[in-house]
Length: 97
Image 1 (cartoon, rainbow, N blue to C red):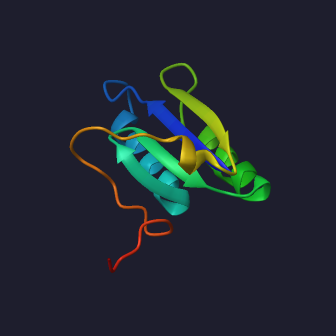
Image 2: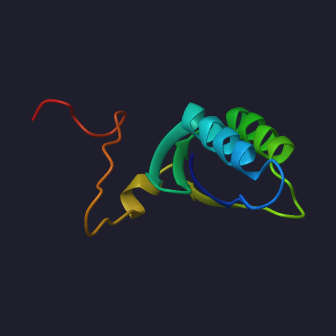
């Protein structure tokens, strides 16, 4: 299933910069960055549980926020991109045209 993950981390709070880096690294383990704090992650249910648990352990619920959007198995068909910074998805975009 395709899950869109967004986050907002307070870098002015103690440890905020470290939390921001760790959340981004965790998301990169499961997906691709499509904007600064937005990741598209193609995961199965078990992987999602691991991903979510890792993120919840990392963030500070009093300072930060996490959002998960479940786009389903055909989620990539529901995405429309306009503008710069198009992200190549190595699992979906052919490397040789």
